[in-house]
Image 1 (tube, one colour):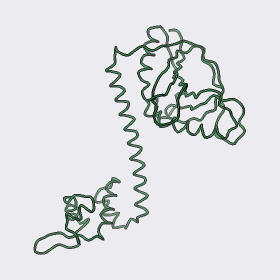
Image 2 (cartoon, rainbow, N blue to C red; image 1 turned 90 degrees about the vertical axis):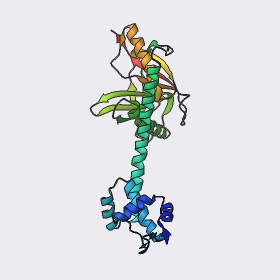
Image 3 (cartoon, rainbow, N blue to C red; image 1 turned 180 degrees about the vertical axis):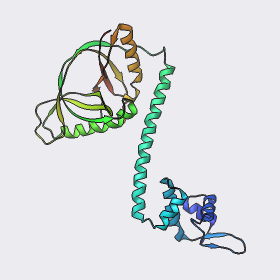
Image 4 (cartoon, rainbow, N blue to C red; image 1 turned 30 degrees about the vertical axis):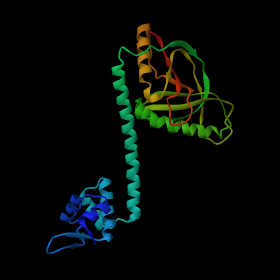
Amino acid sequence: MFSIGDFARLGLVSVRMLRHYDGIGLLPPAHVDDATGYRRYAAGQLPRLNRIVALRKLGFTLNQVAELLDDTVSAEQLHGMLRLRRAELAAQVAADSARLAQVEFRLRSIEREGKMPSIDVTLKEVPPVRVAELTAVAASYEPEDIGPVIQPLYARVEAELARSGLAVSGPGIAYYEDVSDGVLVHAAVVVSGAITGDVELRLVDLPGVELAATAVHHGPMSESGPTYDQMAHWLAENGYRSGQYAREVSLHCPPGVDQRGWVTEFQIPVARD
């Protein structure tokens, strides 16, 4: 038998929490000394405590926890529930991290207003190319929505290309279009040849752009905002307008987590005001 303090330490909870669970009848001690009122707990009560804590972390109220325990949730069921909750929390952390990165970018953009180094914007014609691509819909064009969609798409494109019979003959080109439920993301790669395998890839003849304002961005796409800011100022100052999303051409984007060495050309279709 363990004192309430020892049981709390073994169960990784607080003494206060154990007293509360006892008070509401969720986990009464195995023995209470009549003379001193000291609570004593048995090792066999740890599985119930683990289930209580796990169910609370899944978001259930104490009343719901009591009902679930009375219905004898199996270890397998609880394990499945916890795995699902873990996946939900991981997705939430990823989304929060993306939002935090965007907040930091906006703060840096505000701090650099009027101080940003100029970039070279070049006007040029973009020739048509044949690409192999996969598509998916993102909720919006914001980086925190685009990133989780386009990164898995390109991983699938790479895997499909390996068994397609196509030869990669140019860079990756990401392009976008508005759809009713968000933004359609195209993860494309310039290719040559014909598809000989059974793959999901779609061959598309991507039309050329008669006139595009282009600039080179260095670093992660999540930090592309300042480059777009400067391109917007250049367009306004030089009398150009654009009603389309930019194409993002991967000039140097080696695989791996570190994207600081990435080099991407932005191509914005433009016309004179």
